[in-house]
Amino acid sequence: MSQHYFKIGEVAGMLNTTLRTIRYYEEEGLLEPHRTDGGTRLYSEHHIDRIKAILHLAENGFSLDIIGSIGNTRKICATGDEGSEKFTEIIDNVIKHIEERVFGLESLKSELKASRKLIAKCKGCSNEPSSKGCPGCPVNQNLKKIEALNLIWE
Image (cartoon, rainbow, N blue to C red):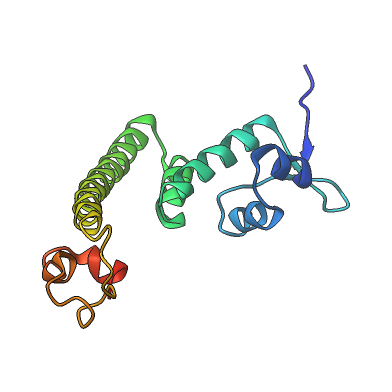
């Protein structure tokens, strides 16, 4: 069964990304496409699946260093046992990072909900929305307690 190859523009279109992104991943050592004698990049289904995985991690805030360590560790391992140990360590670190981000996002979510609740109290207020225009404003009184309000309000 012969393998079908796609040009970089086709891959970018399929994955809703840019040619530059795919080239950048290659420059960073995350991809090694096949090349024609003329230098045209050709991507197999495996390459496309790999790019999808890279995009998925990148879209979720992972650095290319972390993505690279996940994607390239297999190449430096002599045995499955060694690979298993290295991947377990990498994956445990990634999971820890995700848990920290989830905690941070949950805290931010609570903060924004509290901000929304306070800002709703200003509905119908005719004063200027500032500490000078409305010194008794509940938003102004909570600027030190709810960090996001400092960006929203003042």
